[in-house]
Structures are given as C-alpha cells and as structure tokens.
Length: 76
Image (cartoon, rainbow, N blue to C red; front, side, top):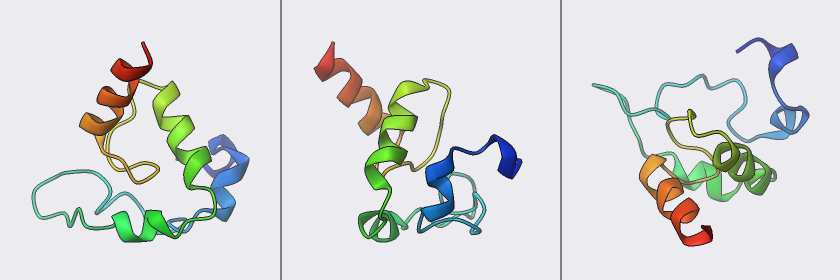
C-alpha cells in the first residue's frame, strides 16, 4: 500500500515496514506475529480499522479474519 494511502496511525505501528508476509495466511507464511501486535501502541486503532472494512484479511489488531467476524456478530 502506498504510504499516502495508509492511515496516519500506521506510522506508529510495531509492524510498519515488515510487509504482509506473516500477517496474511498463505503457503509458507509464518502466522505467529500476535506477540508483536500485543505490544503495538496503535493496536486498538488497527483493530477498529479492520473491523470497519469487511474486505480486510489477515492479522490486524492482533485478530484474524474469523475472530473479527465473531466480534462483528456479537455487536450486531
């Protein structure tokens, strides 16, 4: 994603500069970065961003797609 299109909070994210590998389930990708999310200073902003957009996939705000679907159902 072009930096001009990223939300302002992303510049403070613990994952900035790491790319998507590891955050999106794909063959050969490590999906064990929740610990990084747990220490991130903008974790809640990241989670809110992902909850607001149904098309976002992968690990955001320390949650995966299925966890966010469940969170949306609980709110509805």
